[in-house]
Every structure is written in structure tokens, then in C-alpha cells.
Amino acid sequence: TGEEGAFWTLAALCAHVIPDYHTHGMSGLRIDTQAVAALVGQMLPELDRHFHSLGVPVEILASQWFLSLFANVLPSGTLLRVWAAVFAGGGVDSLAAAMVATLRRHQHAILQTEDIAEVYALLAAVTPAMWRADLVLADMQAAALELDPGGLRWAEMRRQREAQRRQQLQALLDETGLQLGDVAPLLGLSLGAPHPRTPAAHRPTQHRPAERRGSNMILAGGDCVLQQYIPSLARAPG
Image (cartoon, rainbow, N blue to C red; front, side, top):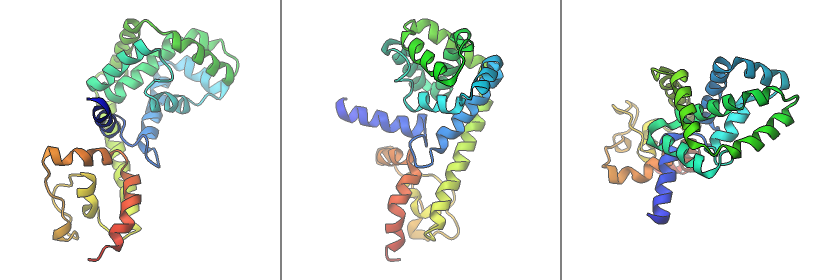
């Protein structure tokens, strides 16, 4: 409860709901917004063509909404219902559904705009007035079913994110001569079998849930954490 509860909620959010959104490379955000832009093109093709004709970057619009979890978009009552869907397990799927539902609801008005400034001005005016949370949630549910009824698209996005994240971590490690297994315990990573080149003293160990709570938070900013700790690890005596 209180400040500690808020802290661990934020830690869980950054580690498990929107991983790698607030890191140096923002790789998770880039992967998700590119996927959402493609989904907008598939589900709202007329609006997508209009955006392209005006030079409206859907990825940038999505990043502004996703980074704030719609806090700067929706009124408080509707926002809390969207957050409930996100925390209940919807995750990024719920954020994507909320974006598609919002754009679809205001598509007719957006199609009347004549430049990018008018698009942003319109969205800034209409989204804070979306007080009917029940309608928004119904639109989100319909959009989610259309987006990815089998969950395969988002599963592939998660695989892409993890692959890119490991590449970034490895690139940082290559600068120091360390192996991923050397810092896995620090980041709470589970690597399975120890790497053959990893010294026994540095091999990842199993941690009880209570011991891992702090490292799960660090996982959200893996590349930033490595940049902070790898130099000192590389200088440590062998």
C-alpha cells in the first residue's frame, strides 16, 4: 500500500506490460508501434491513406499515446477502465485496441481534416470528451477480436522484442568481453543451461520469488542497467 505499492506497481508495469519502452533504445515501443501502425492500415485503410496523404506518422501518434498509457488522451473515468483492462492481462493488446477504437470512433471527423496540425487539434479536442467508458470498452473488445483473435500476432511481437533485447544486451556485453551469464543474476534473467565459457562462480543461480522482486524491476531497463554496471564488472578482479 501507499508509496511502496505504487513503486512495485510501476516496476511490474515497466517489466511485464510495456517492457523496453523507457530504455535508451526504446526497442519495445518501436516494435509495438510499428505493429500497431500496420494494424491501423489493415483495419482502417481509408483513414490510413488519409494519414499518409497528410504526412501523419501513425507510429509517432501511437508512441505518444502508449508512453503515457493514454493518460494524456482519455478522461479519468474511461482511463481507469482502460488501465483495468491492461492490468487484467490485456497488456499491449488493450493499448492497441484502445487506439484502434478511438480512431475508428472519430474516423469521419478525421477524414475531414486538411493538414497534420488539424488532425492533432481534432484528436486533442475529442478524446478528452470520451466519457462513456462502457462504449469505449465495447469498441475495444470488438477491435481486439478483429486485431488478433488467436493471439498469434502479439506472440510474434513478443518474440521479436525479446530477440532484439538480447541483441542489444549482447552488443553492450561485447564491448567489455563479458558473457551474458556474467550479468544474468544481476538482471534476473533465466538462461537455462550455463554458457560453456561462463566461469562457474558467475553462473546464474535460482532465486526464490522474494529475492527476485527487485531484479524484476531492473529487467525493464536492461540496456540502461548494463551501461551502468558493466564497466565496473569488467574492472572487477577475476
